[in-house]
Image 1 (tube, rainbow, N blue to C red):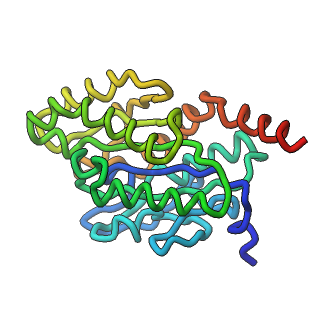
Image 2: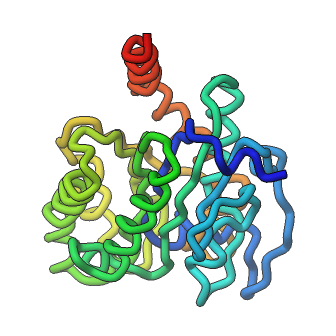
Length: 255
């Protein structure tokens, strides 16, 4: 029976960005090896919103129907969700909303664009059945290393994206956890990393992926690196501590 899907206590997380967010762990020459590490295994308390906008028990590769033109593998989402459940077994159901698409530069995520609108619409639908938007997880920027103008404008565009997303979702202080690049497609990785590490918005945490193991294509993180990165993002989310405060306020209101 699909009782979990009707659970109205969902903790909703948006996963957005490009290929290292959607996940290419275990994909070599466009073939996924189907090795799913323990940290990324399914759990009936971890759901994902499908492309068809219904909830199902999440299983790797969780982005395949969204980032459908590429072969997806292991990303950070399942590891992230499993770590949070392990840390806080009473959190309830975790609802992942995959939105990442490979090769997208930041202009393709600007307010009103296809990917931006898809993300906002999917998140609004995810919230319809009840639940709370907990955080936006963001890993993007490799495509913006190709062109100096894009690299120079990146910080401005990224801050605008974060601000627009928060405003359009009606959550002005939504926790955002972004990843600073570990790999690059072009010569301007230093500029993009500097922009990412220099973001000054409140409630934005930056996790540095630098030094994590990269796959044989030198662009995509390995399965193990994705699993590790998911745990790093989960720890950052738990440090916000805001969701426990929120829950206790809810309880007070009910009394």
